Length: 66
Image 1 (spheres, rainbow, N blue to C red):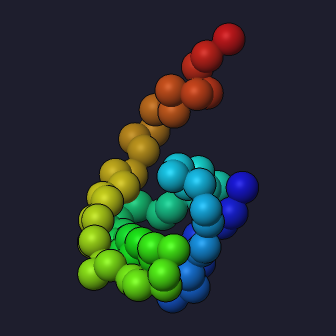
Image 2: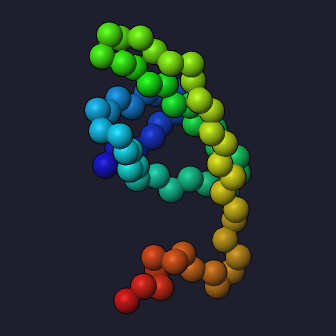
């Protein structure tokens, strides 16, 4: 599982990317660029994610699964 790093591209051939990152609270921006079989790149598609800080005593959903 790749770890995303600032200003470093991740190249995959599968249609789905699963990463292992623990993002700190705040706003994070990601850019997706698709390259076709002829090497042509799409315009970047920007996605912004806001990670909320956990409240004391709050658990992630995966922490509570049996």
